Length: 270
Image (tube, rainbow, N blue to C red; front, side, top):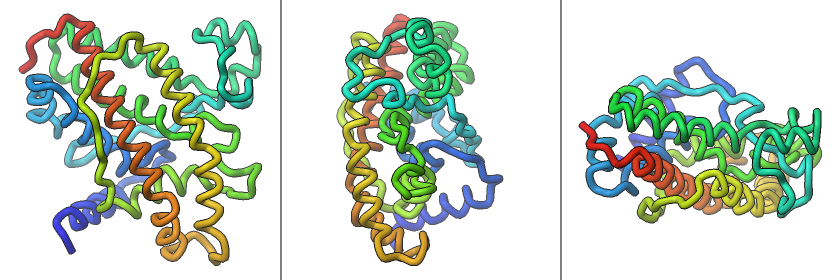
């Protein structure tokens, strides 16, 4: 077994021993994204996060995981058809237009906005623990913007006969591919308008919904259940798509961190 595969296997075993939470992107995916996001940062900022990476909750030796809630998604196609061009960009406007229906789709765009604002303030404060905690929280939320299922009424496959799809794609498949999640990223860049960027990411993720549904149906075809044979097929069918989505997540996380640091005045970090 290679070193990479061994580390991946040990990570899965360690996480499996912890109390299980309902997660969005699962812990293996989150750790891959957050770890790779650090490498996208410019020098200085990258050195700070590298020096303290094990102090970040999800990268710690005993990781602290965040439970999934319905708020951590935004099922936009329950409100409007893609490409969502008329979708209000503020939560108040969304509620004014769609009433009670707006309360049933999730709050992911605004959770990102709120977390980003807290990270800016954390950078300004110079409080190392606060910076690391807020950066880790923002990483988890930004990563969710790259999961196509977070924006679709088909997120759990109920309407398509693919019950449990979300858990299989977002949690179990990354675990099955722990030693194969080699992400390809670009350097972090400044985001001109973080709020609008959130909605742009939502659209670029949603276009993959049909691919996930179709490829997962092929992976499960003729299988007696969702055991190792299924996940072997899922790696073949969905592996490239998963790596692409997680790579874009790492790009985005690094860019949101860099933008928050810049918005805070690029304070020196220790």
